[in-house]
Every structure is written in C-alpha cells, then in structure tokens.
Amino acid sequence: MPDQPSAAAARTAPVVIFDLDGVFRQWNDEELDQVEEAFGLPPRTIITVAFSPELGPAAVTGRLTFPQWMAAIRERVIGEHGPDVAGAIDEWEANVGRVDTEMLQLLRAVRGTTTVALLSNGTTRLRRDLHVLDLLDEFDEVFNTAELGIAKPDPDVFRLVCSSLGVEPSDALFVDDLPENVEGARTAGLRAHVHVARTSTARFLAEHGVLAER
Image (cartoon, rainbow, N blue to C red; front, top):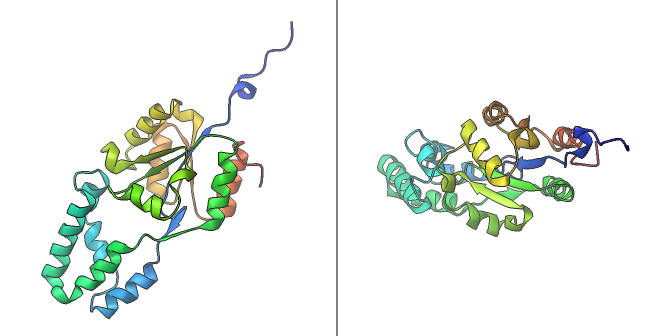
C-alpha cells in the first residue's frame, strides 16, 4: 500500500485575512494636521472626535452610517470651535489615504497561492473607498465590520469571518497593525501577526507557506 500523505501535507495553504488601515492604506496624518492648523484647530481634533467612545464604535459597527457619522462629527467640532472650521472637516471627509504599493505587491503574491480576504473596522463608506483606491478587486472577499455589526478585536468577528470563508480558525492567518486586534484573532484560534514592516510580515507569511520569499 502506498504511503498516505501526512495531515500537514494534505492541508491546503491557509487562508490569509488582512487588515486595511496601517497595512495597505496609509493615512496622510501630517498633511491633515496642517489643514486643521490652517483653520485654527489643534492637530488631530477631528479624528479624536470621530473615534471618540460615543462615535467611533457606532461608525464601525454600522449603527451610524457614514453620512450620519460625519454629521455628528460636524455638529461636535463646529459646536466647540465655530463655523469657520467647516473647511477642515470637508477636507478630512474627502481624504481616502494612499496605497502602500510595496504591500500591494506582497498581497498579489500571496493571492497567487491562496484565498485572501480583507477584514476592516470600516464605516459604511468602506467599499467606496476601496473603489477609489483601486483595491476592491485585490481581495477574494471583503468583510466590513460596519456590515457585520461586530468589530475587531472581538474574537467573534474572526470566527464569523472564518465561518463565512468555510475554514476553521486554525486554518487562517491574520495580519493587522494593532496588537489588540491580533490578540483578538489569536483568542479566536487564528495564527496572527502584528504588521510593523513589509519584511517581517513577509517572513511570517513565508513561514506559513503562503509566500515564496523570506
């Protein structure tokens, strides 16, 4: 009788689930700081309001739509700083960040070997942003927490995504720039990595057999 393949050899490459912001999309925070200062706002005023405990969680779980979220941000910022700061909010709202082209090349290399999904703590505008950035078709599946109703780092969102992908958590890799999200993924049973730089992320993916480089 011929030798049976080992369980490890019989397994297909693990599915890879990536975060978006801080991995593929980088924000031009310094430019926005200058915009706020030009309108008389302290730097990071808008983002602090946007992701306050009252507004941030509601936006990334879909309890507030993107227009509702922006309306609430405007009300709070203009209410405190006056109507002259409205232009800064307009520029903040229009901003979609920029794509890290080196990480995009890595994504394409991984997608050549296995299924690649996106899991983002996004607002209801996420798919529009991905379209503008020309990223929408770079993933096999896109999971937006504003559509799922549950956000990272809750372990249940990782279990939900794995179930939707038809894989066990142990057969999924996860990459995110926030340690708390990586910890949530590990709690759910995924093999997860904190993204700091392309080189270390590539090493993690190569070690798990989904990237032919080190």
